[in-house]
Amino acid sequence: MDERDVRLLKAIADLGTGSPEALHEETEIPVSTIHYRLNNLRDSGVIENDLYDFDHEALGLGVTVLVEVLADYECSHEEFAERLLDIEGVTEAFFTMGETDFVVIARLSSSDTVERLISEFEAIEGVERTNSTFTISTLRDESRAPATYELDTLIEELTD
Image (cartoon, rainbow, N blue to C red; front, side, top):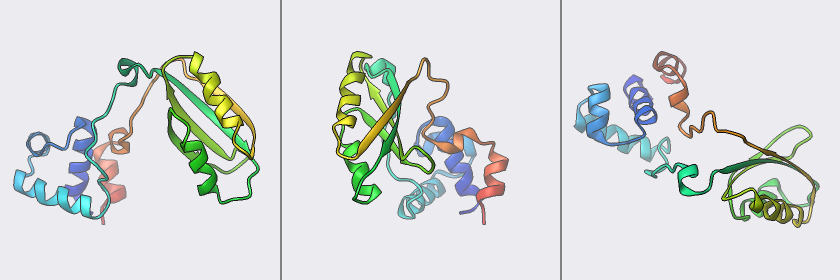
């Protein structure tokens, strides 16, 4: 990855779009070069998809719950995680080190649905205990990590 690739990724993160025209306006990289580089970034797996982002609050899924899951399971952590991910509303799950085995993030429609979520977690064989935290407000919900960096830092840390 070179500086132009990093500039494109930063622009995508900042603008929230992969539109070659918008990226050209932001970076001054020629549109034909942008097409070529975006294809290469997709082929190498750096760009995974072209999904639209949602405002979960406006959508009606504005209750965010962070759940720590402490578990004792016989299968692999990947297999156990699949059981957690099968629960409706779970948007992210992380396998962690330390006392907590997994941290799960769920987006729910109301505080009433939290009881359902926790009940479903606790019904999974191997879940010993959960610890839930409701968020009061979202301070940052950025799925594009480059948006949280300065361009110079990204260039320094990511280019060959």
